[in-house]
Length: 145
Image 1 (cartoon, rainbow, N blue to C red):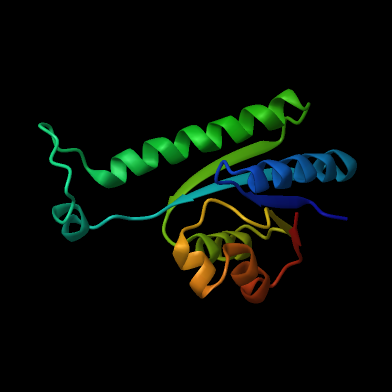
Image 2 (cartoon, rainbow, N blue to C red; image 1 turned 90 degrees about the vertical axis):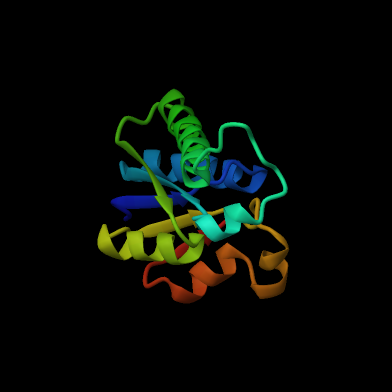
């Protein structure tokens, strides 16, 4: 039924549950499993407001990308250990809901699987969760675990 499944993965308990459900579905349908971790872009202006002044300043985007990459690699290893081989992991900067929906559209994803609650901030409580936004914006089915 589904050929390409996309999992939004941020390392939270909800994302772990979504990953396990997506692995189960990918095994049933022989689907390709796409994992996506999205990190927030930090501008130089935001960095200049930081109270922390390291002796060797780092580019915040590089730090965030490195963390997101380790989170995505963890998800990929979980899927591989579960017996899947058709797995691709992606790390993207941007807004999670928009990035997931755009990726799904660009890569002809048949199903998006997300955790009900992730590592979102207070903004998520005030403006709506990523899962809520993706269900409203996506053209393909969304499974919220």
